[in-house]
Length: 69
Image 1 (tube, rainbow, N blue to C red):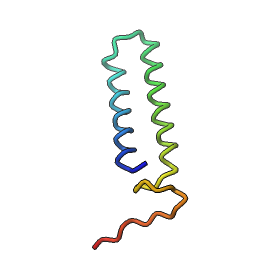
Image 2 (image 1 turned 45 degrees about the horizontal axis):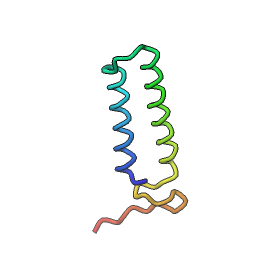
Image 3 (image 1 turned 60 degrees about the vertical axis):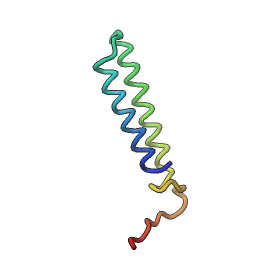
Image 4 (image 1 turned 120 degrees about the vertical axis):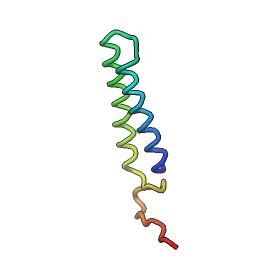
């Protein structure tokens, strides 16, 4: 997973979490459940991202950024 993909998904989940807390017209217990599910999604995405370098290669491969030209 490339860095931009990871950041886009994390930001999207963050926005959804904020919107669900403010705009969701549901009972309080459902708001808490939605927030919990979105938070679990963010934790899973963060854990998954630990296995990739910023350029999308596996973390098992040493990461060497492109040298400036």
